[in-house]
Image 1: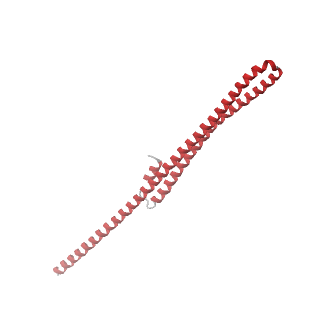
Image 2: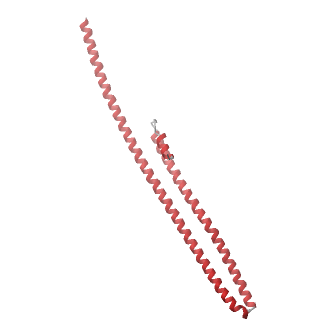
Image 3: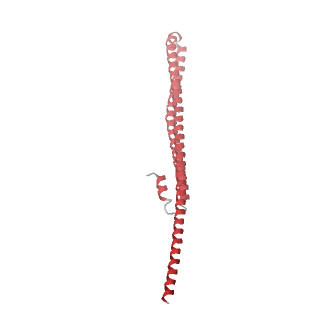
Amino acid sequence: MTKLDTLADGETSGHPDGEGRHLKSTVAALRQALEEGEAEHNAAVQKVRAEYEGEIAELEATVAALRDALELSRHDGRAAVEHAVADSAGEIAQLRQTTQALRDAIEGLHHDHRQEIQRLSAAAQDQAAQLRAAARTLREQLEEAAFQTQAQKQEAVAAAAGEIQELKATCQALRLELDRLRGNSR
């Protein structure tokens, strides 16, 4: 049994103003559920962001280290031009490929991150839509219950009024009969 069901069962029984309190508690419960959904969404986004930011920082540090290595390689190449030209050309090409691969990996991570945020956002929007639909259904059910309660009250009042009229008529007939019997005994 959900918190909303508990409120529906417990707050309207026997209280004349229970329906108003029930509506208010339903709205409060729905707001709380929506806020909890938003908090979960925000926590998931922050978790994903933290995971990717760590990897991105690590990749950027790797790129910086590779760039430093490239600079060192160029410096060494200048010192020993003839021997290092062939070696440094191959190493530079490899470092460029590595850098490009790292850039591609970073872009892929950014893309994955954006997709995850979109997925989380869509899930949160879907949950919010479901909560709104549930609130609308509960409101409709509450309105129907209030209408039925009012109709039942009116029927009970009408039945009681009819019974009272019948009892009055019976009392009047019995009084007349009693008066007639008293008159006959004199």
